[in-house]
Figure 1 (cartoon, rainbow, N blue to C red):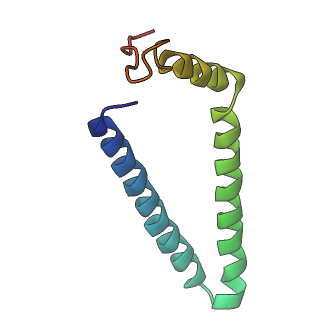
Figure 2: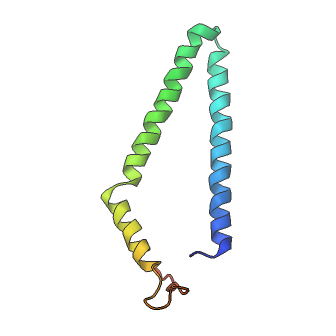
Figure 3: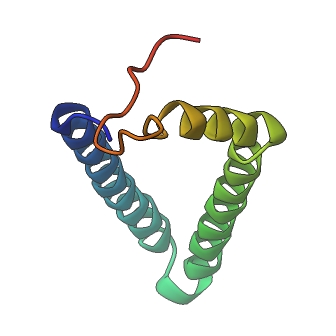
Length: 95
């Protein structure tokens, strides 16, 4: 179990990044659609949205590589409670 401070910071960063990405996405898509008529330019906006989807998919595949899965398993073992002491989690040390 992590202390509440780092968990709160991680949650705040994730929420802030999500809000920033949404705002930028709406601004970029809106500026494309406002360019040369709604119907004609909406195709370009959908192409941008599709390109962002492909980029997120690629990042997800990279983040779930064998190296990332090994790191997650290693961290899971480090955070497993000590035998006979379920209330105590071992101290996290640098690898």
